Image (tube, rainbow, N blue to C red; front, top):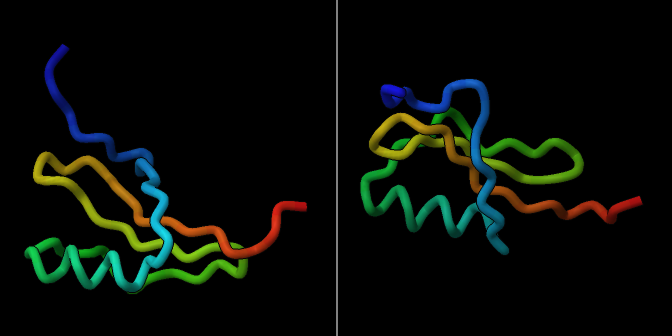
Length: 65
């Protein structure tokens, strides 16, 4: 099967601090897709790896009900 970037979704990477992790990656040249999102449940920031696969920095801050 030929390689194709994952477009339909993103792999979520849990981090303790999305803002700090984003800054660290931006300092290494990573470009993010838009601003960091606050959904009311979690913070997330979307970007892609060099092959175009979707990745997301993610931290849930709301309690699980």
